[in-house]
Image 1 (spheres, rainbow, N blue to C red):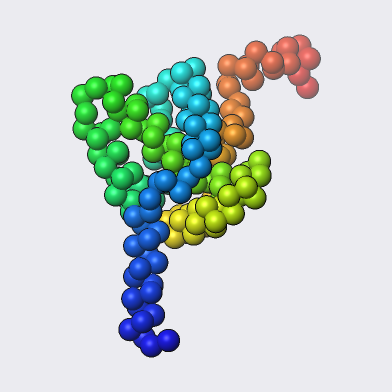
Image 2 (cartoon, rainbow, N blue to C red):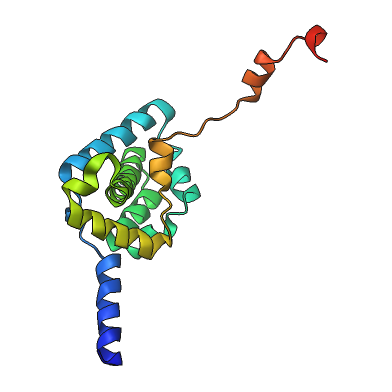
Length: 161
């Protein structure tokens, strides 16, 4: 293959990975991911969702995709909390769905092998690794050690050595 053809192929591949059509995601999966995210935030509040996305280092993926970037812009500039939450939930739903497909969690990759391969390509291109931050957060929540809990469970002073 000539250098010019290789560059054209690489450019087309990059464009395909950055401006992918979200319709490749199975509707059942996105519906379940959305339900999981909304139920979590109904208990813990939606205000932490932008922070979760930020700390997960998902900025490059969001910035590279025009639809996700547009949702982020809308979420960040709207005066309506409901609209903002809806946009952030949409971003998180999309990324969590991609992570689940890419990892083949619960057999999703086996059911949708082409979509799973495409999801792996997207993550490899945009995150540089196999890190699945939203899966880790929503499916395997971190165990926080509360200082109040530690103080409550501490040995009585007369029993300490």
